[in-house]
Length: 162
Image 1 (spheres, helix red, strand yellow):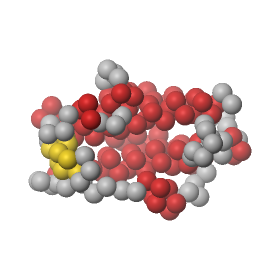
Image 2: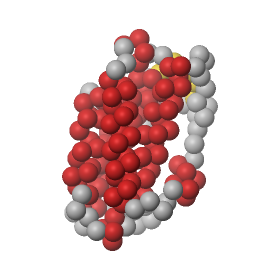
Image 3: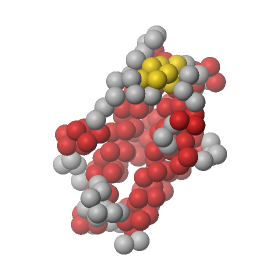
């Protein structure tokens, strides 16, 4: 089984409880961007990187995809997750406004937090396979989602300071 150390966002989460983090991070992101204009949502934290608006859409899409992945693992024996191309997904929904994207992200994050908080320890140990990461668990996905939110929280902070 793949270890939590191989999770690409475990370091962003640090030692924080992922459910707690999922309860805090979306609100922190909303607080940073809540008064932004359309032009401010189009700023990026670095040249060639996504704008704040696109990061918010990406966060919403990630909540949708990864939450679904965990739900499928819990309800489909021997579930094999499909990878998704985040850049191609983003192209399909890049027309959302910044305020729309933040609302969707916060709503999906709340739904996922509630879902993950309801799981038993044995639910969190349920395994699934992934063609790029190997054998994972629902808990691994939880760590991925929570760490991913924190990873992008820093980007919003960088954009706000510009």
